[in-house]
Image (cartoon, rainbow, N blue to C red; front, side, top):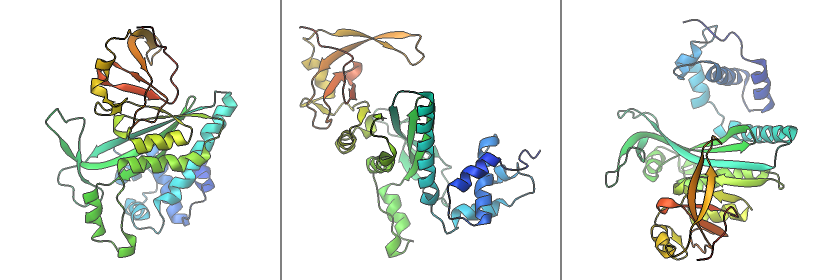
Length: 315
């Protein structure tokens, strides 16, 4: 195999040094080599594959020890990296004279592993909502991580990424840990809120913030916390959520005697306008602390902190 990396990028080396990580010279070298190889190589991204592309035949086992047993924590890299990425995105926005609007996108993903995997601590059986069918749940063995992505204008960065561990996984891992070093179970909602709380101090007060997530994260605790920050929400609602004291799946029946206002919504490609029917409705939703809500087709609802794109018509 032809070696493709003779020396790490000077810009990457300067960036990693600016993070002021508590690493010795050998550890910093491995972190720099892995980061460079992840960006520049193709194919499998295992340490062995990455290090085969670097001249000098560095040892992938030493790199594994750097990430596995070295006396430094993931937060030692995650915290300064998150701050650097947010500041860079905001600086690019100001240089381009773009509107002060920030989008924070929350989502989770399941990474499949082989069914025989036993050595990776975070691997366990998780519900697979992609393969699941009505009345036919599906499960896959792997690990789940929650991701927070920040978008400002044309710039988009993943500013945080954290593992989600099931309660049973936490109990299993705590059996082999010291009493003072036990893991604490956190639901996906709690992980998401902690990630948003870590980003909040770096958001300028003059920026309008929109938090986007799917119906899984549309929980009262998370939505109320976001609204307390003055942020706005864009999400879907599960059909069993209460809207004006009625489940969303039955909400259209209460509005069947009202006229619909036709609203033309432009698709993401900005070339295919699609007509959609909206029914404006003031919401006093116990699980959705919003000022306005709109009922969408097929029993779903899109929610924003302030919605003014459609106006009610006379019945």
